[in-house]
Image 1 (cartoon, rainbow, N blue to C red):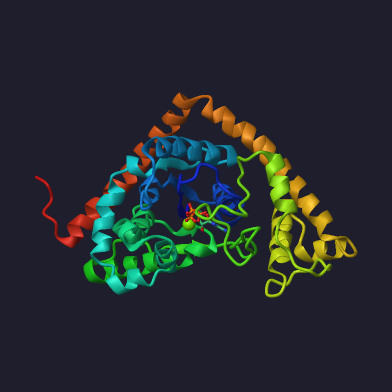
Image 2 (cartoon, rainbow, N blue to C red):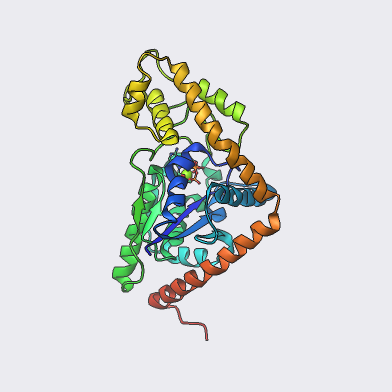
Length: 330
Ligand code: ATP
Ligand code: MG
């Protein structure tokens, strides 16, 4: 089976609708067709300062949410990034292959660093894409299910794999991005010009929040002063985002929804989306609680995942270190 790798940060506790529709939905379906490796990327999350106790509990919380969404530990290798030291061992090599200018062109770095004082921007935030490339390349990954915002990092991972291969001999599989066509970028409900993001919590629908709060957030989503419900991302970004969310959650096409809502108001559309999200979130939240109630079982799943991941990753690092010219330990 072709190999899949993807990761998600444990950052702010709850996953949001953008994470789900942009990436996690594909994590679940690809289990049918691929050999899947899924990782809670805690190393990535400390590129921005984190409270240790919160990081620890958010990591378990992230794993519980992945299991509740349908990541099946009998089908997928589910693990925590810091449990597999090969990630940092390979990332150093890739950092040494990555150009300074290349890293400086990453828009995620530019965005995230512009929101902080320069003294507070970590070097880790800058070298993040090399660690991400290591995550992917360690597993001989063919496809990486992510949202549109990760396309540039994926491209860099491909370049690093090719550069390593041409300099040292073919070692890495060059991975492809697997980005949805319809839900690649879910926008913030309060600011439909920006992507929904854990780092800017205004119009973010969190999968673990109180359903009443979700319904309220959707009701107050920013739209426009017209009355027609139709898809036009340029002129009607708010309504277009809502149509995409509705379509993804209901399985109905955007065209179908446009005709179904002809003559209806924005309020009707919002009320229905609120209901769709709540119908999804309610059983999901109960399942998450079930996993959190049994932390020993959760840790067992993660330990098993890390052991399997290490088996694959250590073989890749051994090969890569040898190619680079590191003297093998006696
Ligand atoms: P941050 O803004 O702090 O980076 P995030 O919300 O982007 O947080 P990540 O853990 O970085 O969360 O991303 C997890 C996955 O979710 C990635 O594959 C990313 O591409 C995808 N994703 C994140 N936000 C969106 C969005 N608004 N629409 C579609 N996909 C998204
Ligand atoms: Mg992100």
